[in-house]
Length: 245
Image 1: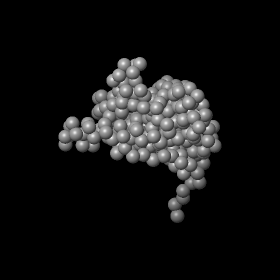
Image 2: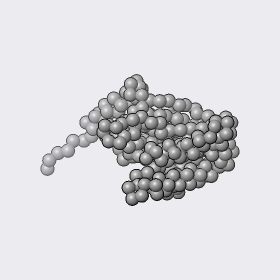
Image 3: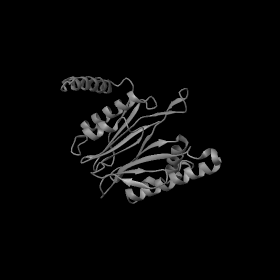
Image 4: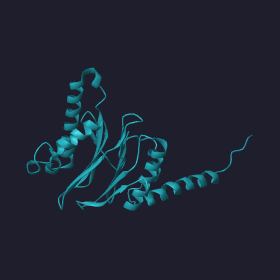
């Protein structure tokens, strides 16, 4: 399983993903699910992936045309004139990849190769944008009414985001909020695991404003995890008591 979150703020975009993939309790691996590309001064684009690993890896490879020699590659993400056109191309590739894999595997392939992606970024002269791309190739865009997207194991971390999100919050507070959301998910579901990948895209920056891998021994994440647990216990005990009759 996976947990990825993309969030829109007044200041830009914040993304975080876990790195765990598993095919049963005895086959657990670490794979990057957050990828980004930039052209300094012109564009910054990032993609997060959830679902069948072969499908997501195939789509990322096609976007970068990894079958070609490095000097012959023509990265689709770098060519797109708008973020909408980039989302359209990723959706087409995702749908095509899933259909080909399912067709090659017949009845046994139905439902096995599904994947979902979050696309985030900004192209010069336009606003930062965030999209959720579905297996069918269609997509929706974030708005101030729906300012963040989650993919993968979403239910445990969602209440934290709903209660804590503020579009005017700083990047630092947004990262803190995401870490609490991920900590809640990690504690509730073993199929989501460390390390976590973090990326901040500042508005009009066209380069990573901050990039960090949060490992299992990260001291700040430990502080957040322990502090949140303590704060919840204090909040619980501060609530008015229930009485019989």
